[in-house]
Image (cartoon, rainbow, N blue to C red; front, side, top):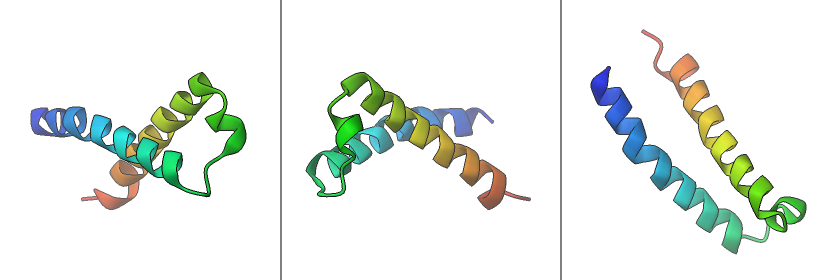
Length: 62
């Protein structure tokens, strides 16, 4: 349990940074979100939390 918390504390900032770079330099960026920085970061954090939820629910099934 403690290792999972430590893992996500280190992984989430790396994922957010990677997604930020991907959406910033890609042609498929979302224009209305990219122009509004607050909405952009809410979208990024929400996307990471959604990925975390889906991995926990479907991939880490015992």
